[in-house]
Each structure stands twice: as structure tokens, then as C-alpha cells.
Image 1 (cartoon, rainbow, N blue to C red):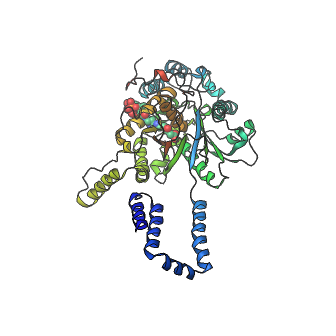
Image 2: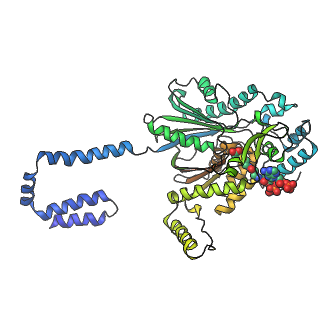
Image 3: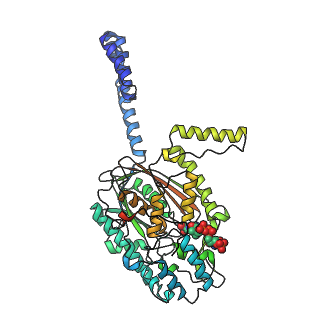
Length: 479
Ligand SMILES: CC(C)(COP(=O)(O)OP(=O)(O)OC[C@H]1O[C@@H](n2cnc3c(N)ncnc32)[C@H](O)[C@@H]1OP(=O)(O)O)[C@@H](O)C(=O)NCCC(=O)NCCSC(=O)CC(=O)O
């Protein structure tokens, strides 16, 4: 009787733990049957039954553990600290542009207008070659390599110093850089510089646009599933600006000259939680390139006069909005609390069944994330996301300030933003971060991280300027 009561108590008090409930239930059953009946039943058990009873659950557990996806962690990351010598205030940028014979007065006026409205500040940087007069003559393959070396090697040096990981411990190396793709590849340059192992798995993602940083993280996550336990994957994300200065007069191709700036970041991922700072919870990739307008909205081409550049479509904001919708439809169920999902489901059903004019419910992602890193692709992108996701000014502060301080640094902008949040001391253990990248293709990639260990110091690209941020960014900058 006492045993029965104890077991029943155990069942009640352990309502949250199924294994305790199972053991307690077995105990109750045994007590109810009685010792003699139990002994006679046990004597009927044959060795084969015992073997199967032990072996099958053990085998199932081993198979489950082997097939279960391994958790992937961000050990740490480091952003390239832009040197003061590469700074390009608006006045210098425009004065320099006036000296480029291919650019006419109308183009200069247009670029001036764009810069004033772009959300960029006076401290963004261009690579050394863009500071020379007669720029195009200096934009050689050697100069482009030098830019990559400056950015990537500095970021990797910082990362290795921070993490204390030796280069030989790197098992996987992925570089994403969209527009500069030399041979030997950028990956080979890193292997050569750091004398990495000959059995390293290495990949260079080119032509994949500004959202490729998260594509690289997703690829690293997948490769880490089949690598030895506790393997390390180094991801380097950058865009080499040197060979991409547009020298024509097409407005849609002049826009990148005004927005893109030098920058890059290195991130170390591992399946080992030791020393890790963040855990990768989810990564969702959306590619809408099957639609012609989405495919062509960020397009490298030659203009009518043969000048090569990147054509940014005016339709980009609508296309990005559609890609975002598809991405959050997949991300939402994984991260949103049940209440938000129910509200969304009700509005969906109401629209389908009752009236199509019922406003669709946009889930409140602030219930799922404490921090947001939105690709700093341009002021309009951040404005649009802030509006669509109902984010506060503080929640988009990291994106706006990154655009102001560093410009559009392509895929590395997300890491500068994470760095901003940490440098401001806003990251807490357990906080959830949503990174949203956009880029040519057209792609929208999203990653959800959980903080395990906030940064211990503010060393990094924001170290010398964080005390001046946030700054006020007017819609139109007046000089
Ligand atoms: C450039 C802006 C800051 C300007 O903002 P404003 O709202 O103040 O002004 P606006 O939109 O009226 O534009 C000002 C003038 O520029 C012109 N204009 C704007 N965008 C243009 C475009 N893509 N092509 C040609 N002209 C363009 C407008 O017609 C207008 O000229 P007029 O007054 O004469 O009509 C903003 O439009 C912006 O942030 N756009 C998004 C930039 C972008 O595409 N970023 C993604 C980069 S790609 C990326 O990051 C990923 C990747 O590469 O993979």
C-alpha cells in the first residue's frame, strides 16, 4: 500500500518528466501484481525475451543519436576594422568622381543626391585603388587580391587570436565573395597564407550576392554534420570592391558606387559547445530566382557603351518583400510562440473562407527574437523591413548604424550588426538573434541564433567609435 502511494505520488509530482512517469507506472504495476505473481511471471521469461528487451531499445537509442543532426555553434566572429587611411568622406568621393572623365555632370549630381539620402555617413571606406586618380588604371587583379588579403587576413588574424584556435585545427573553409573570383581561388589564398591542412574541405561561393554569408553558414553547418566530432569550420564573408567601380552613366549602375564599401568578416563554427558564444537554432534559405524579374533585379552587365557594372532594379524593394514573405512563412512556425501562430492561422482562414479583404496578420517577431540584424543594403531596405515587421527604432538601430559607419559591406554587414549589439552591451545569455540577408538571385536567407556567452569586451570594428553611436541620420543629409 505504502509503495503504491509512493509510486502514485511520484507520478503526480513528475508530471513534466515522461521517463520518471514510465518508471513510476512500472513500479505501481509491479506492486499491484504482488511478489509471488511477479516471481512466477519472471520465471516464464526466456533469455531471448530479455535480450530483445534490452538490445532493441539500446540499438534504437544508438541509431537515434547517430542520425540526429548535430547542434552547430558559433565559437566567435571578427569583423575587419576599416583603416582610417581608406576613409572616403562624401566631399572626397564626389571630388574624385569629378576627375573621372567617363562620368558627366549629370551623373555627379545624381550620385550627390543618392549619397545624401543613402544613410551612409562620412566614415565609410573604399579600397586603396579607389583613392587614386585615374581609378580604373589601378583596379587591377593585383590590387583586388591586395584588398582581399587586407580584409580577410585581418579578420582571420583577429578571430584566431580571440578564439585561440590554431590554423591546423580548421577542418572546413568556406569563402563567399560574389564579384571577385580569381584563380587560384580566394580559398587557396587563405590556405597558402595560414598553411592550412592538405585534407581541408574548402569551397568558394561566388556570384551568390549579399545573402551568401548565411548560405556559407548553412553549408558549413551541413559539412560539420559529416566531419569528425568537434571539427571547426571557418567562414569568411566579404565583397571585393576594387574591380567593381562603374565608369558609365546608367543611373541604376551608379547606385552601387554610392552604396558599396570595403568590409568583411570571419566566423568560426563548430559542433563542439566548448568556448562557443552562440548556438545556431535555424537557418532558412529562400531563392525566388525562378521568376524573371527576381532573377534580374541585381544584375552584372555591360551598359550600352560597354562599361561593366551592377544594375540595381528599382523593383528591388518589392522583390525583396516577396522573398522575405516566403522566408518568414518558413521561419515563423519554428520560432514563434503558439499565440502568434494561432493569430496568424485565424487571419489566414478568415481571408480564405470569409473575406479576402480581411487584413493578413503579420506575426509579431519581437515575441521570438530580442535582436535583429537586417542586411544593411541601403536605407530603403531597412525602412521597408522596419515597417513590415513592426520593429522599433532600437530594433533596427544596429542595421542603420552599420550602414552609416561602414556602408553596404555586402554579406559581412550582418556580422558588423551583431558586433554593434554586443559592443553596446545589449546582448544577454539566452537572447535570440535573427539575421536576415538579401541578395542577388534573388535570395532572402534567415538565421536564428541563441546567445550562450555574450562578448567579454568590445574589442572589434566598433571599439573606437561605439561611444559616438547611435547617431541621428536625417532623411536627406545637408552639407
Ligand atoms: C538609394 C536610396 C537611398 C534613395 O532613397 P530615397 O527614398 O531618398 O530616394 P528615391 O528612392 O526617390 O531615389 C532618389 C533618386 O534615385 C533614383 N533611383 C533610386 N533607385 C534607383 C535605381 N535602382 N535605379 C535607378 N534610379 C534609381 C530615383 O528614381 C530618384 O531619382 P528621381 O528623383 O530623378 O526620380 C534608396 O532608394 C535605397 O536605399 N534603395 C535601395 C538600394 C538597393 O537597391 N540596395 C540593395 C543593394 S544590392 C545588395 O545589397 C545585395 C546584393 O548585391 O546581392
